[in-house]
Every structure is written in structure tokens, then in C-alpha cells.
Length: 123
Image (cartoon, rainbow, N blue to C red; front, side, top):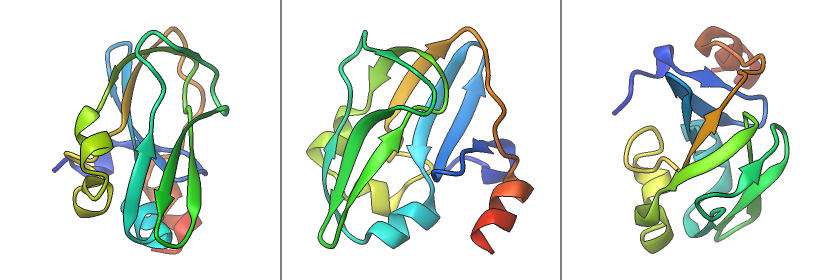
């Protein structure tokens, strides 16, 4: 499991792990809890260009459908086939095996710190 205090976050409840020019993206435990039991995950294809703030995927649960937003602009370099095959990983390990996409980017937009995200969610 990733140290959540070292991650950056979006107001749309994505977490972002920055490693060089690559952002690994997933949804937070808060978002996974609000969605309920995840039953389907749709992710963009590797090679897809994405724009920060745009919808790049869909996460369906037994009670609602959530959208995955790109936190950075760039190119999708990897998708997690594990969550496509076993969507429940988004609930059981959102900060680890439940990661969703990796995006190579040129510029990092402003993101929230762990403290800022915790204040946003009231946690």
C-alpha cells in the first residue's frame, strides 16, 4: 500500500503518484466507499492522449456510476488490466493493486496535498 501522505489529489477524488514524468492515478478510498461495490471499470487505451480535467474512464458500482478524470494532460502509458478483470480491487486496495492508469505528462497542474484533500473530504 502506498503512503497516502506522499500522494497528491484532485477535488474529483483521484490520487496521483508522481514519479519523474509519469503520474500513476487511482481513486481514493473515500471515492471507493461512496461508490459502493465496484462491478465494472472502463479505462482508456494505452496511447490515448488525455487532457487534465477530462473524463477518461468509468467506474460502475452496484449503486451508481462514477467517472474517472485525468489529473494531468499527456499520454496514457499503462492501464491496470487487473482492475478490469477484478473491479473489486478498487474497493479492497484503492491505493495499491487498485491503481487505474499511468500517464506521461509534460507539465504538472496544481494538485491537492494530503492535508488539503483531507480537509476537502472532512476526514
